[in-house]
Amino acid sequence: MNDFALVSKNLWRKPVRTILLIISITIAFLILSLMLSFNSSLSNVNTLPTRMVTLSKINFTESLPIAHYDRIARTEGVRAATHMNWFGGYYQDPARGFLPVFAVDPETYFQVYAEDLGIPAAERDAFFRERTAMLVAAPVAERWGWRVGQRIPINSNIFTNGTTGSSTWEFTLVGTIPTPPGSSQSGSVLIHYDYFNETITFGRDRIGWVPFLTTSAEMNDSVANAIDQRFANSQDETSTQDEATFNESFAAQLGNIGLVITLVVSAAFIAILLIVGTTMALAVRERTREVGVMKTLGFSSGRVLRMVLAESLLLSFLGAAVGLGLAALILTVLASSGGGGGPAISFAPIVIAWAALIALALGLVTGLPPALQAYRMRIVDAFARR
Image 1 (cartoon, rainbow, N blue to C red):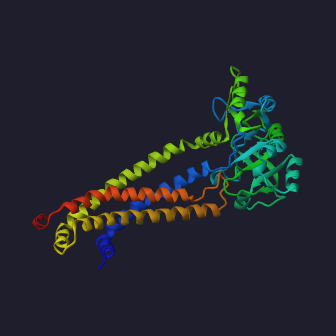
Image 2 (image 1 turned 60 degrees about the horizontal axis):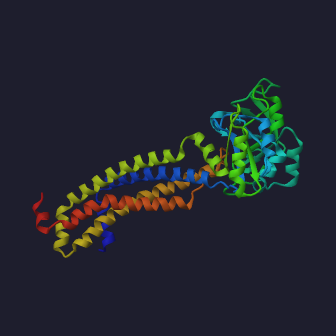
């Protein structure tokens, strides 16, 4: 019988305990994989080095006067600018998830986000032409079963439609936006700002933020300073930042993702370290006489150390593999359901790399103390213990 077979036999000599340990490790790696995948998907959204965003200095949820947009667009170094408003949308039932609906100026929006809006010219022109037109990301249309030409009622949990007295607007779907990996339009629903602005009962002539392109990345800092200084000490001061920072701020509305991941994963793995470490130490103590027998039969101390350490590593990697598999399955199911609530979340290779490193560290940290205990154990002491 080779060493691997002995390690496997020892690992499964108490199957209930081993299964419970694997389940504990699996849960920890499932949480880790899902959170890292979510964070990776947010950070991997396509950004341009020349694309920047101006928003309220107070926070993301505060609006700005539409006049700010005109002044920003005329700033030296700004090549193209557009403006956007958060609609706060949902379809039919808010319990089924929100829709990231943005009220935009169609023509300028297509100038600033041209590389992510590869739709047929006919659909683009229809969106420009029809005030009640709507463009949606392809996964959103697939999720809800929407078809081009369909009239779709969209509700807002923020605004009221002044023409109907309800929170519902009807839009005509004129096209779908392809969303390859990293697309900034993943989950997006686009409507006309002018139509939205004329029908809301409050907040008219206000905008959420102003994305714009600079003439070169080298001018980003000077343009940002010029814009923010222009509105300094006004009633609506601004903060201008690059697109990547803005995306992080947008995600932060859901909470500090990095902090959440760190706290949750740390708590999970501290618990796992205590459980697995204690269990491995107990397992070696239970096999004290067996260690003595193995050394009597000619197993070197180094070989015994490797076998105990291998048992801990095998346990750790088994739990990690199951956790990664479950995370991949969950993300695949979510992707096939169409998503529709933001950037597409996929199982990134970096998640596997991190999981492998953490599984290795977990196996070494929990396995090394009992392995050293077995390594140092003398034959006479092993047989003397009861």
